[in-house]
Length: 414
Image (cartoon, rainbow, N blue to C red; front, side):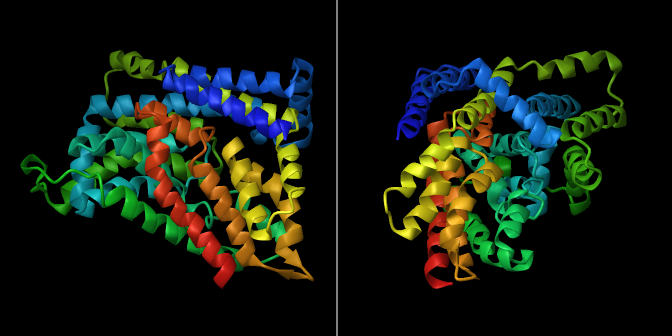
């Protein structure tokens, strides 16, 4: 119970600081510090946790590696946006998407949906410049743009096998990938439908005369779209196909972009100065420190044990445990690894695996991630789109409830 209270207090501190308009990076660092104090996580305990990570995890899963790689990736994303702006690609992207996809709403959602297939932490920033440019062009409120980019990006997570959580669940339950994905598909469909209804069908201003469809042909639209999108696609291909770290891949894409468009070398330093974003560095540091405190302080396990002692209905436990852990950590695979060993007692009985109940558990996880202020993608969205976390969460909430409802339906009907 104490650990749960400590998490709640630290989250309240975060919300209070954000309400005082303190930058999100600094706010997260302070909240993580408060959590460390409340959980009694000493520097020695923190060091022991880092050493344990080094010994027991792959290098790419350790906190120092994540901090360096994610910081590099996010700062370089700013460079991509600056380069595209100076070259003139950003101003042509919105009309190109509207010309290719016809609907302005589809144009806003399709890029985060496409980039959502790239399971890299912080990858939400790859589509953010495109969504912001397209949305600003048609006058969409920034908090709605942030919600669209954040929510649609994460709709492949229940079924896309490149996300580590899927093979992890498959191995734990001993079921085929096809069967697991078949059940989880209801969550993806519900999420996309909910996102369309609550994020795209409302809040999009009527088309103005100066936003009329471009007279350019399909070839011209395709050319503009490819010129703007290829650096992101190039990064995705290198990461998925050749396992190149995304920060390295996007740096190569930037160099290729500048060389392809023959940008004068004298302009390069000014373009790369766009990477100077101290608050994003603090944001990553604070988010990873918060997560490390939870692990070093044993808080998540204590919360799980506390709810196990309440003798709650099975469906409530199966939904709430992943929900609370995901909302507290903002991490998908970590939530699965922490809660599923406990949930196995409910999901697998008499040798039979109830995948409907497991789908409810994953729905709880998704719902927690969607409204977690600790979720890195949500925090980054608030910073990049210059809006508040609360505004994004309130806009995402109805669509996220559709995912939760789909999980409940799967547990009851399937």
